[in-house]
Length: 306
DNA sequence: AAGACGGGGCA
DNA sequence: TGCCCAGTCTT
Image (cartoon, rainbow, N blue to C red; front, side):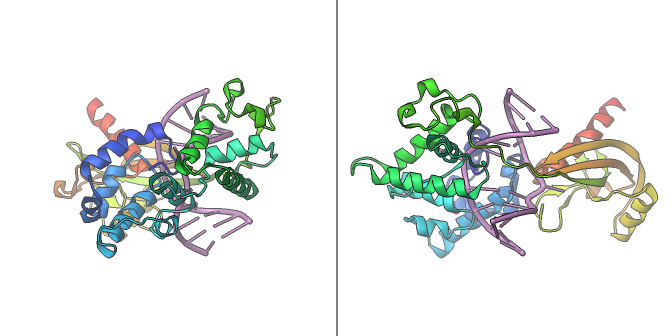
């Protein structure tokens, strides 16, 4: 959950997730849909799918035996460089360096590296620096504790903006102690946003909606009202018919904007009439996409106000 | 090595 | 709106 997501945002999800899936067997036995539903709102849903797959590998192929080394951990789906190193060092005492966004920032400053935040050379430099520092640890000192200490330094004092250099425990060895720290690492080149226009068909009654699983590789497994690339109302009706959908397309009832990593989506919502009530679902029973959740808010406010 | 992931929160 | 986050996988 912590991959690319802030600790504060994760905590409530983590606690609920472990209540529902208290051990690896419960998680492995759950359906992907159940897992996604518990993940809904955290984003990057591929993480949930891979965690589920990893649980199945551990409970079935490995018969409940968790990996014990970084190399073994990295073989599980969703466990990459960072997570395998974190688990191996923190949980098993393996002397391997952990490099996350915090560590890269700390190293960029300690060594006064004028590199961009997303430069691979910075990641590599951080790797080398951490390995060197780990090599200096005394036998009784924990690699996991050291890794966490550097990450914690980045999270609390060596922050992206306005670092608290005056309180820094390693100020004397920092090459950016002259005030340069706040300007490192250099800003990453930003990418251009891609824009999409979609039309959603919204059928609702008594808090229930027409929902379907998203297709394609991106949002697969998440649910939302049916949608098409933006077209005219007539063409929308035609496409809906051709897709085998029931009901008739009514007037536009609203617009939703959704911005996610490098994508700007503008969605126009159309009322869909004449859908049998038996086809409608309770949104709380399926894993909704982020955009889907936004779309469902519009007709709710419509119903209340008449 | 670069791009996608069609995230989310906060300033 | 822009930036960052206890990154990983695919091409």
